[in-house]
Length: 96
Image (cartoon, rainbow, N blue to C red; front, top):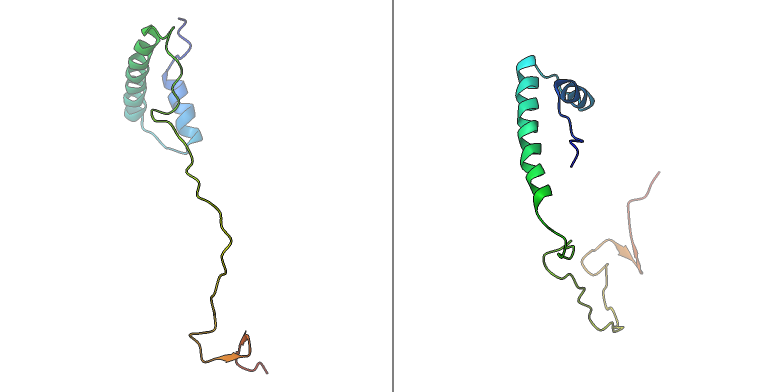
């Protein structure tokens, strides 16, 4: 497989600039070498034979659990705990 990820100092510098990170020269060198190592580890996955393996997007089957939808009377009085009410409305202070 072609080496399509070429990590060099300029790429790390450009990405850090986009992320608004001010990296020193030592940090640029360190991150460049670390990213090269990470990509080398991921390249080893390209060698795994996955020809007869089905794609697995989730390790467990995802399913929705539904309940029976029943209409019920909702008995709630939002003004039950207030003394500031007038009929079916909240009563507020008079605005002058």
